[in-house]
Length: 102
Image: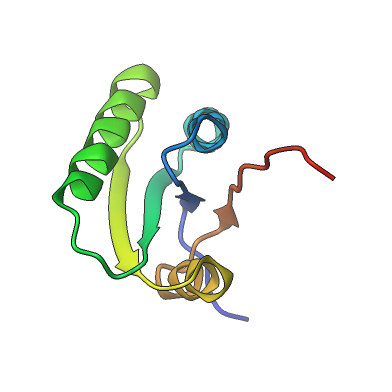
């Protein structure tokens, strides 16, 4: 079995649901003494605001919870890229938001 790093991966689409997932993951990261990594998956269009938005969210989590936060912006599909990134960074856990619809 592959060794896991003390990293919580949190994919975000910058929605309220994504922010809720970030806050819950940040609380867990603080409790577990883990690092958090924020991931945004793009559709290929170059958008300078993505890195800026990720950096703002990372700074807010660092300030609020006193944890280390990295960011990744990657082109791809949410259906495959989240798993690929989780494997690449050997994430221990992945926190996903849900909209609550059935």
